[in-house]
Amino acid sequence: MPTLHAIRARIHLDPYLLLLIGTVALAALIPAHGSATRIVDIGVDLAVALLFLLYGARLRPDAIWAGLSHWRLQSLIFASTYLLFPLLGVIITILLRGHLPHDILTGLLFLCLLPSTVQSSIAFTSIARGNVPGALCSASLSNMLGVILTPILVSQLLPAASGGFSLKALEDIALQILLPFMIGQAVRPWVGDWLLGHAVLTSVVDRGSVLVVVYAAFSAGMVAGIWHQLSPASIGIILLIDLIVLTLVIGSTTWASRLLGFSKEDEIATVFCGSKKSMAGGIPMATILFPGHAIGLIVLPLMLFHQAQLFVCATLARRYAERGRAEDLSTAHLASA
Image (cartoon, rainbow, N blue to C red; front, side, top):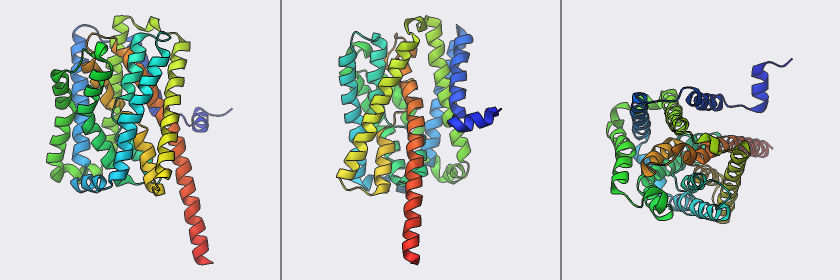
């Protein structure tokens, strides 16, 4: 009889997915009530601030300028994140209006307005042997711009849900995300090299912060009693929609990269940075931008998309890497002939 480890290896089950599922289960069984809610909220603020402080401390200024100089790469990734995704989100919400709960439709469109991830964009680009400096710059720039662009897009495309543009919301997001990032940049000369040598620390903070914000969001949903509104079939439909959006974006960025004559390394960076959406930044933004709403329902499409992008992009990164190794072996064989 196969062991649990063998089964997990066979189906490529990410241990982090198990932690995420466990966090949701914990929120369902022991949601935060009363004064505990305030403690959890403070924990979320601290976790997210620490996450972006570490991002800022690890990112070298020369890497920023090197990435920015490749304007075609950055422009295509920006267009995917802030033009293609929102367009798909608007189309989907129009087509599905009346077929899914309003907060779910809000969540689907909100998902499409978020910045890219930092950690997984860079990690998958590295695994696939792509342009890592370009990915590092693009993902970081996307998050910094997202502090301003996401609230503006939400105010224009979701005015009824968000209450329109709010300088207070913009200020809250800047304090929670952009300010820690800038502090990280300021202290980078003293701690940057040490952090680069301890990548596990950043990974733990990255994943740990997501677990904290997921617990807070789902805990609030349990207290508000919103989960009876969704059936397993509805959740399956949401996941299917997420997969369709992800497939369309990956296909479009791959096609556009090849049309523009990008190198394989730049194509890889474009695909992995242009197809991601940040859950670490998205859930805190949702709590600020949608006060008084069922945040658990609004962020559910984002949570499902996050898992879908991890599975799909992990598979794609392995294929890119295997193709690259095969090309290296072929080149070496020709050189020795």
